[in-house]
Length: 100
Image (cartoon, rainbow, N blue to C red; front, side):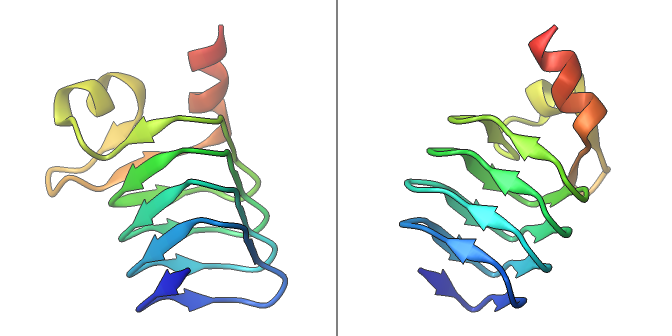
């Protein structure tokens, strides 16, 4: 369900909750995901059960299942780039470092 959000053509929201977010072309949001106040650039794929708040997700990023970001400022700052106002930027190289 997308509430107060703007969703471009070609997006798939499958059993997820999307609130106050902007999804660009070809974004996929998988089941049980919670997406709040997010900007998701084209062709990103957000894994099942992810919980993301106040994030900007770069083009083509593959968010792993169950990933949580945007809730713990200290933890977010260690893994991603976080602004002084609490916005979390997530790029594919940042995700790849988490897997290593």
